[in-house]
Every structure is written in C-alpha cells, then in structure tokens.
Length: 411
Image 1 (spheres, rainbow, N blue to C red):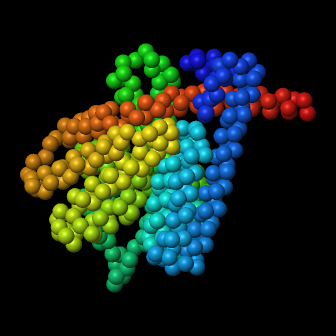
Image 2 (spheres, helix red, strand yellow):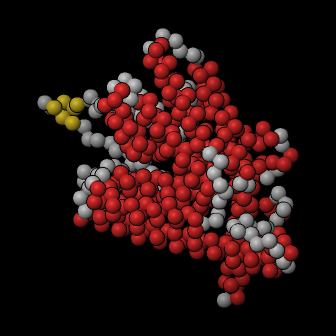
C-alpha cells in the first residue's frame, strides 16, 4: 500500500475492519464496493451503539427521579453498566471502538456507579437537565464550577474551601491552565504536529525500532489530547459550559505525583478519585491511620486503571490479555508510593533542580511505556490498523464527494 495519501487510489486501499482473506484478489471495482460496504457497516454499527447509549442514559436519568440513591438504584444501574461493557464489541474500528471503550465502558460506567450513590458528576444538588445529564455521562468532560463569592459583613470571603485529596496522595488543586488565547494556540500547534506525525509514521519501516516507540509515545499523547479537546469544544458549544482541561502539559512534570495527579488525563483522574481512591482512603484510615492511608488508595487506583486499560486493549485488538499494561500501572503506583514515602521522610529538606526532575520523571514514564505499555499495542497491529483507517476513511470520503458531485451534476 502506498504511503502517500494523495497517490493512493480508492481501489488500492485495504480497510482492516474484519478484512476477508480474498480481498486482495478482487477486481478494483469489487474491492471498491467491499471497502464501501465495510465502512458503511461500521458507521451503521456505531449509530446503533449510540442509540443504545442514549436509551440507557434516558433510563438512568429517569431512575434518578423515582429511585432513591443507594443499593436499590445500584441494582437498577448495574444492567446498564454491563451493557456499556458489551457495546464496544460491536465495533471493529480501532478509533471508534477505542473511543467508545474509553468514553462509555470506562468513564460512563464509573459515572453511573457514582450516580447510584448520589455522587457527582451526574448527581448534583440542583436538578440537572436530561441534555446535560447525557452529555456528562457519555462524554469525557468535567464542568468547571466557579462558586459565587460569599459575603460576610459586607466583605467577600476569600478563604477557599478545603481541597479534596488528590489521586497522587497529596491535597491541592490542579494548577490553573494558561490563558484561553495561549491554550488555543497550543492546541493548534499540537494539531499540526499530529498531522505531521501521522505522515511520518507511514514510513516507520525505515526507522529504528526505538525511534518508532518514541514516535508512538508522541502520537498517542497528541491523538488523545486532540480527540478530547475536540469533544470538549463540541460540548462547550452545545451546552455553553466552562470545562476543565484534560491535560496540563505533562511533559513538564517534575514528579510522578505531578504527572499522574495534576497533568496527565485529568478526566480519568477525576473519576478514579471518588470511585476508587476516596473509598479505599476512608477504609484504610480506620486500620492504618490517616498518615499512611493514601498508600493503598494510590495503589488501588492504579490497579483499577491498569485493568481498564487492559479492557480497552482487548476491545481494540481482540487478543488475549498479557497483563503487561496492568503491570505498567502497578509499577507506576509502586514508584509513586515510594516517592510519597521519600517526601514524607525528607520533609522538603532536599529537592532536585526542576530540569533534572522533569528529565527523570518524563524519562521514567517513557522508558516504562516502551517496556510494558506498548508491546501489546504493537503485537495487535493496532498502530498499523489506525494508519490504514486514516487512508481508508480519506479515500471513502473522497469517493462519497465524487459520487455526490456526479449526482448533483446529473440532476
């Protein structure tokens, strides 16, 4: 298959959404029809999945009106969670299946479980509309809540409320992002870098394997951030809400606590905190005290995150798990616990220079990704399938445009 998109005729593109073994031996016309049928079938499956999601969310929204929070609502929500775990199996595309698995099977399921016990983001003090409920449930967004200033004796109260415990074992809020103009420019630059990187990866057979792994690290980060930003922009335009950012320049992390708790995939962090971290923290406090309770809470959060990543990998590749991804997160959680213990022991008496901390932190995450996170991803050929899907989709849309143009000309 040619690596230059502008030189790839539609009839030469081999889409990999369940490819039949005899597809290369079909004629150009038959291959073109087969590719179109595969993509139309996948889009049809995606629409069915979306319809099922909307029906389930309407049902869940109705539960909140008539069923009290607690075990009864949990029993009513569990079938929806089971269906959310099943729906990605109806999708073969790496992009559509992976996004559905992350948005619905992971985040959506956890949000509904929290909703069963009357917790945010779906359960709020004020009545929430059905549109906002569905958007928050099925999209990876977190609303930026700006509380009104409180007045006491004619003066504005400036003392903030106590911060919630972070997934990284510390208290505090995520650093506020840069200005909107600077953030927009940053996203535009990263979008261009993603397009360039996709073009480079088409020639990956000419590069050293270690360089390919580095490029895949950049690709996954840029793709994930770009996808989440686009979803956030769409949700913000439709709902008119101020949303929290999903990433906060993780390449500037000065520690594992900083990376996992304040900079990387903050949407997942915001869901794991109330769903996993805080329950384990409260339970551990009763047995080992408040000082050491964050340690098992941190490890439990990383174990759950590892299992959910294994599930997403299975949806994308349909291969038996090797548990390397889970061990990646167990390793990260273990090292983060050691970091917490060292900081407690040193009490700020020793601190590495910021450039050194950034290099060590980012370097450790990248190297362990090479070792444990990417092998299963590459063995399932998910990287190859993602690139081929770009080509197939581009050629499909080109064919649709040509067909529409001919239809308009004839009419």
